Image (cartoon, rainbow, N blue to C red):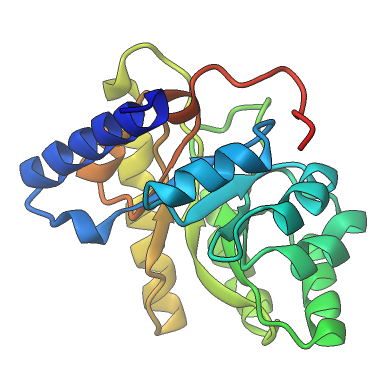
Length: 233
């Protein structure tokens, strides 16, 4: 068994145990492989092991990597997106996580119309109010919903957050719980479901699943320590 296969089995085991503890089934949580700085060959190996969803946070790296990766791979943008990269993001990704302003949403809407595409988006919420992180505060998300509803070429699918780093995963629990509660309030106001809660990473995925995450983002625990720069194909 390769190192990647062993890591994947361990992660799936952790996810399964967390689902059992919270009375959920494993098919209610999707695993995203964060492939930042890893080459297309690594993506291909992961696809061969059954992974289908990959996350990238740099447009330039994605532009060179995605065409060289298996066609069956699906791609989400998970980094901070600048408005001048919106055109490429719409062209490359089925979902753009981390939409953090109405200005960015408007830019994505404009390019989605031009390209006749309907990308899904998640709103990034800075639940903990960390100055080092991007994202809406919870009240701003609620206030922005009427304007966001007007962007009919974007499929608003849910919320995402990154919890403050801690060696104790329990520190993240109230952050994840608050995001789930905010998602429910947003869905009530919209009158339609927001099925995706993207929260939880290598160190805190169990707590995130217990609090309702439907998508966990795992890089280091899956691929090992990532290279400091993108590896050429």
